Length: 205
Image: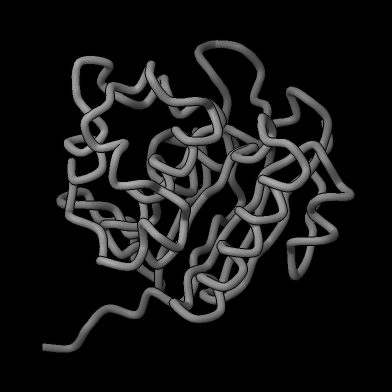
């Protein structure tokens, strides 16, 4: 059986919005290959998060299409395009311990937790017992556990200090290169994106 080609994630002519309000995205196209980090910046409210959610199948656009390897995103099973939100606490069941949250989809590889700085002792804690930076590492580990072809990273280091930001992005750049994961890094911080991304796209109103 031939394996599907997951090398290229494409959004073509996307128009998207929320409810009956005017669309925040109009005819936006973007492509993301494996092993590359593409930065996405722009002012607040220009649609960066909406585009990230469209690319990961979490938001249905009004027009346009998203394809992975030329085919629509799969509707069953774990999506090969994983979205990591700015506020990881909002994506976790507060009644579950961290160990259960991490393995909600699949168990991560044995070395991935160490690479991301997720400590074994966190498994028996609840989300509210970890800091924002610790929860972001947990969210990344959970997303990587399903062996995605692409990651959508939405302001994931905004709450971290400069040293923690550098460590996290060094790890993600290494993963992009060694595991051939395509990454869309969404941020309002153009300086950061110029440092971590292979190329940067700008959205405007």
